[in-house]
Length: 113
Image (cartoon, rainbow, N blue to C red; front, side, top):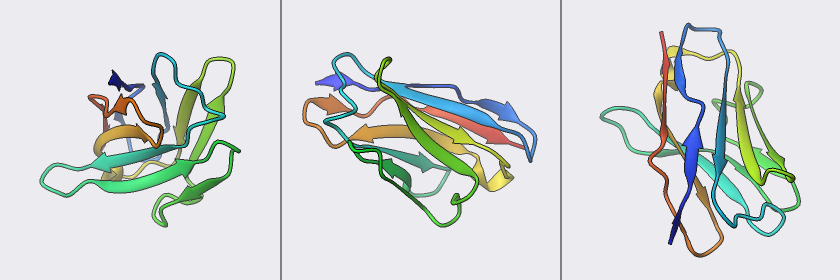
């Protein structure tokens, strides 16, 4: 299986922004959907957002209006733009595709203070 690769995490102050990226060799965004999940320390992993192959999206209620998922077909990369970040957004963020042959990445840490 090919491992997904996330990047773009970091430490920001509340109200700040970050853009996360997710990609993998051979990933094709017009055939595969992608979810972002997050897991805060001591808590269960929770679903954040999904983008389908046709570009339609769905968001968890607590990120709606603040987070935007998009894709760059040329780079076969999925982006998660996170604005108006809150301390409760602090978590390890990971992406997961519904296409076979891929496994979870190591994630990227987002810390909001």
